[in-house]
Length: 239
Image 1 (cartoon, one colour):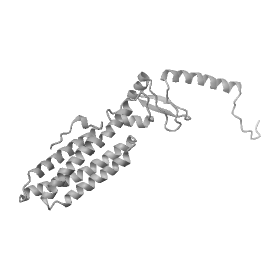
Image 2 (image 1 turned 90 degrees about the vertical axis):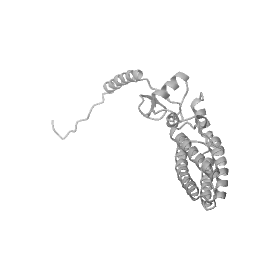
Image 3 (image 1 turned 120 degrees about the horizontal axis):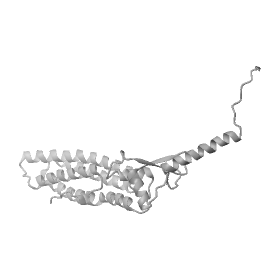
Image 4 (image 1 turned 30 degrees about the vertical axis):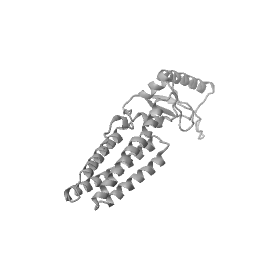
C-alpha cells in the first residue's frame, strides 16, 4: 500500500515536511520493490539493499533535525519522541541484517512501513503540529518572546522585519518585538512575558520615548542647577 505525503501530514516546518515527503517516497519505492521481488533475482536484491541503506542513513539525519526543532519550540513530549526515533532506527537496522534473506526482509519491510509511516509520521509527528498550532492561535500566549519568535518563524522569516521596543521590570532592558508579533499583540490584545522577571511586556512607543527623554533631560538639568553639582578643583597651593 502506497502512502502519499500530503499537507494533512504537515508539522508546520518546511524543512522537516520536505524530509518527510522524501522518506515517504523512499519507503514506497522500497516496499514496491519488496512486493515484486523474485527470490533468484540478484539485481532486485541488491537494489533493495541499496534503498534500505539510503533509508537508514536519511532517517538518522531527519530524526536529528526533528529533535533540534522540537527543542527550539520546547515541545513537552520530546523525550518520548526521541525514544520512538531510537526504536525506529533500531528496526531499520535490524531489517538490514536480514538482507541476505530476501523473503524475510520483504516481510519485515512491510511491517516496518506500516508501523513507521502510519504510526509514527502520521500519528506521533502530528502531535508536534498540534502543539505549534495550538500555541499560535491561543488568545493568551503562554510563551516568552524568544520562544514565540521561534514558533512564528516556522511560517515566515521575521529577521528582516521592523522591530518595536517593549519593556518589562528588568533594569534597563528592552525587548525587540518583530512587526508581525507587535501587530498581533496590539490587535488581539495578547500578552507576552519576560523570561527573566516573568512580567508582561509593555510597548514603549517611540513618540512617548522622545517626549519622556526631553522631560527627563529637563528634570536632570534642573537637578544639577538646584543642587549645585560642581567639579571640585584640585588645590595644589596655588592662588
